[in-house]
Length: 252
Length: 253
Image 1 (cartoon, rainbow over the protein chains, first blue to last red):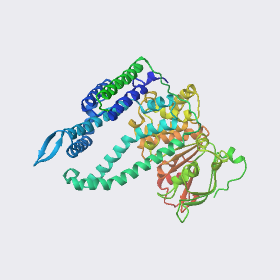
Image 2: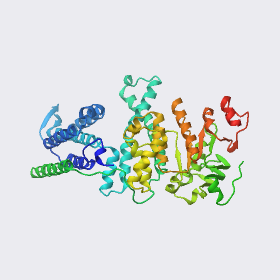
Image 3: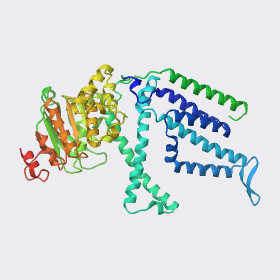
Image 4: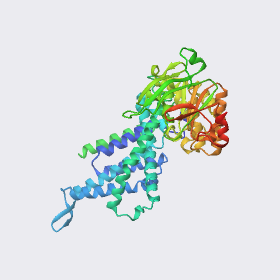
């Protein structure tokens, strides 16, 4: 089996390098303008890899609202710089606070888009890529299983919420405070169910001779092509440029 | 009760055998079952019936070595897989001799393509890739999975097809013993029919098969029916509530 039979023409390792570069910039950069540029580059890369960015943002809109609220709170409680909004002599929003709030939102968006790029590679290809990089296969499979459990966690949450609503509770009509309390009650059975499923999956994996030997053969074999090297080279070069520019203006 | 003889002959004539098997959960007073003796011949299908909570799945875990090798619990007595006690084997050594298919296929499948699921076991046993390719083709043919499903995501298949993928992934390790833990409980009528026929075919190839069932309608594939009742594994007796109607005839036979 070769990479040609994969649904994607790019090696997952080139995507991992790209995502590592973008994510590192999201964490290291402090300047909102540069982060906006990184976000734009990441967005373009995501579209090039066929990621439905708008769809992802739509699905995560509730989470994004939460981060936006956190950014606003951060901007209100961070003093320094020019006062932009004040109430009765008390400064509410400052330029430094606003900058911090905006960078938080940008950071979250960049990481969301990075995750979107990773999801375009099959989890088996990601495992194989990591394994061919020399990472122990147990760790590589741990990554694959983590990817496998993300949709399971979401499905479990949806099932639990549906079950509750089928018993007559109209969640949309419940005030936010009570709704949060209901969510907290549902968290325990949800986590318990996912843990139970993960234990069953672990048993199934063990019973298929996982960790029989220190090494394992691979039915699938990945091979880098010119496009992969171009993606990785461009990602590393762009990262170096961003970091150098940030260092020169003292925003790193 | 069956008397399980000692000696190497057990492994040859009876690939799977349990001797005086007793199990208790940690901190539980009474054992869940005790003194279980069972022998399964090559080519034989033994079905274990029992009410919910009677310990059927736990017995499966003991027979397959999951207990004590993976899950904790107080197990006494012995389970012999091809004549060797599961206590003397590692999990991969058990896995290459014995395959177990569970009730819920969703907790057995984790790869995004059918062929990856099937290849996983042989890869773990360091089988060369060219040989794995042949194995994938062979087991897909055995379980009746069409070639066009090879690159499909198992999670997007029907319940019956998922269970076939789970079975194919177990068969790729070429075990001589197969345990099916209520594998038909989530399937529709067609899916059940397909799995039942497949189990009979696998027994016809000489595999020793144990199925665990709560549905009497699935007993027509069994050569023998045992009942786990009040912590004892006993032969089915007429008049018991487990087998009624047509299924009762199979039990009695």
